[in-house]
Structure formats: C-alpha cells, structure tokens
Length: 321
Image 1 (cartoon, rainbow, N blue to C red):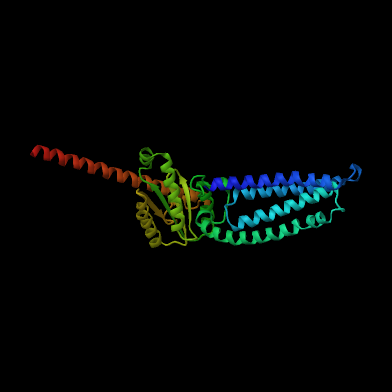
Image 2 (cartoon, rainbow, N blue to C red; image 1 turned 180 degrees about the vertical axis):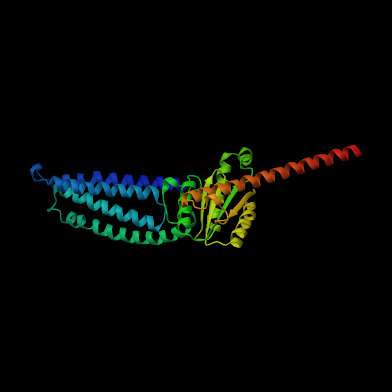
C-alpha cells in the first residue's frame, strides 16, 4: 500500500512538472517575443537552468524516500514552488515578458513562497528527526554508516558493533555484553520457510530495540545471532537483562540461548592483559561466541541423554509387559 501510494505521488509530480515545462513556454511563445540569440545571457541561462535541475532532483529524492505525512507535503510543496520559480526565471532569460504584467507578478512569487514553505517543512523535519533519533538510538548510537547496516533487520552489523565496542573500551567505562542466538533456527526456516524466518528476525530486531534502554546498542552479529552492548551495566543488571530476554523471546514461539559477560582484567587471559582496544574487542566477541557454542553443546547433550533415558524406559516397560 505504501509503495503504491509513493509511486502514484511520484507519477503525479512527474506529470505536473512535464505539464508546466511544456505549457508555460507555449504560452510565452504566443504571448511575447523571444529574445535575439545575441541578447541572451547564456551564463544566466546555465546557472538558472542548473538551479532548476538541482531543485527537481531534490524534489524527486524527497518524493521517493519520504513517507506520507504533513512534513513530506510541506517539503514537496516548497520544493515544487521553488522549482517553478527557477524555471520561470530561466524562461525570463529567453522571452521578453515585460508586456505581460500578470506573468511578471506570477514570476516573482513562487521562489520566496517556496523557500518559506520549505523552511517550515525543514523545521518540522527537525522535530520529527529528534523523535526518530530517540527511536534509533539503540540501533545506531548516532553513528550512521548505511553500508554497515544489515538490510533485513536494519540494525548495525558486526563491523559497526566492533567499532562501538572499541570506542567503549577506549573510554574505560563500565559496560556489559550480551549475545543472543535463536535455537534451531535452521529447522524453523526448513519447516516454515525462509520468508517466515526473515520475518522472525525482523520482529526480534524491532522487539530488542524497543526493550533495551536508550543508551544500549543492539546489532545483528551474524545469521540468527544478535549482540548487545549495555552501557553503565553492573553484574545484577546484565544477568537480569539476559534472563528477561530469554523469557521474552518465548513470546515469538521460539527459544534462544543468551550469554553475557562483563569486560574486566579477569575476563581476559593473563598473557593478553596488555591488548589494544581493538584486540580486546575481538577477544570479548570470541569469548561470547565460545559461550554460545558451549551452551548449545550442553543443551544438546542433555537432550540426547533425556532421549536415551526415555528410550530405555520404553524398552523396560515393553519387557515387563
């Protein structure tokens, strides 16, 4: 629905622009006199034409990427009026329009009105972005690199998380690390399909972003694995958060393995106590991955033992019968 509305809006802007581009010169051609080529200031034509083309590019970008709403409408209206003013100024360099008082009045209005409306739209966009920044804080922490964003979950990826982790280690501030891995995700994909698996990951990303505190950061580490940075965390907070996440994910009809650690000299091996921040970050992430693997192996061994015990019970009962 949103894509259809956006395509329709884009088509309307294109159609109206083409209509103005063809009708206005046709009107001037019949109602006024074209300037001789020698009297045309081609530098003005080039600069005003460039302003018109750039304004149209800005307009198409806004139309194609912005969601519907009052802010978008103001931006489109302001840029459209500004583009119209630039186009009329361009035509003024080609046609003699002093004999058309109505056109002279009409030519002077679009640019200032457009800039005024555009300024109002930009001011409201600033207020809107303030709210969006608060919503995205647990995803980006105000370090936005679109090439480091996971296309499915819209979270930062492992490289972006490593950047934040190195920065946090360099500041010598307390923090905790959590890693979450969805259990048996490959079976979930096999049973319900890849699309349902992708939808689950997207829902988990949104849920994690809304559950964590503003100062925390969640990233998609790899596949069905997420990693979380808890700033200013103490052991009770990290352990409680890990337990809450493990319980909360059951609401998505799945389970997850959650491990955590508090970076300190005790966490790292003695021979690596003088590591750089980047090296220490790599060791911490490796430690979390090892904990995840150990937890999964432990759980698998328990499951195998239980299945073996149940099989023995069934065989014993069959012999008794």
